[in-house]
Amino acid sequence: MAITTTGELVLADAGTVADLRTFVTRARTADDGGIRLQGAGPVLAAYVCVMRAKLLGEGTPTILGLRTMALAAPADIDVTVSLASVADRLARMGEDETALPVPPMTLNESWAAVSAPRGGWEEVATVGADVLIKAARDGVRQIGQTIPVNPGQLLVNNVRAAVWGRPLDGLDGDVATTAVPAGAAFAAYALGFVAPGETGAVFRSNRWLRLSTPRGHVLVRPTAVL
Image 1 (tube, rainbow, N blue to C red):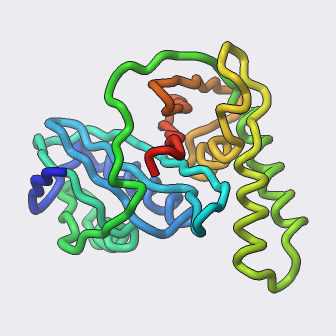
Image 2 (cartoon, rainbow, N blue to C red):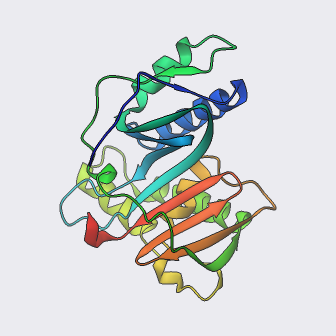
Image 3 (tube, one colour):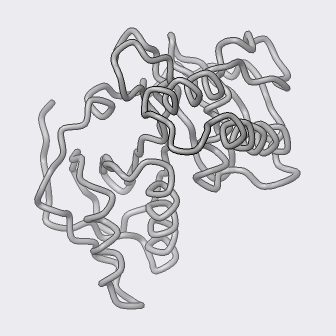
């Protein structure tokens, strides 16, 4: 993948900087790993990984979060860096500063190696935000009640895979419920993409799925391309 980097990303305004800061903070609570910054002209796409398989053969789905933001200066960049390094630079920016220095140290994250389709998305279902919130909270509660004190990592991974890999109920449309894992609801909830009373939509492009709300997007990546 050809990568063209620039020294900084100039975000549209202070509100956009605050939005990115919130997104990074929420992403770190789910998986404090990397963030893929993909700038194309006046738009920045920021991808994070909310969950993925940690062990070979594990059933945890790979689920990404995506926020798009406006840039004041066009950029041509595709780089994956640590969330911690971006958080550090955002914390050091002044109240009116909008230029985000791009961290020089890149990460090699397997989830960032394959991009979601840019087009060909077909809406196949809708889902209420209340359904997503309930699924996320129920899953967190079940995991907390199932995992014992001082568990082994294998047990933790297996429990999470079972809870977040199960079908998401409550979809209204043609998509098979087995195609959307409950982990997509957790990702939307953890990243702040859902609010009570709102509605989200599920899209499909080939074997990829996308859960979109007015606040952001959740991408479910097919296992075959991992």
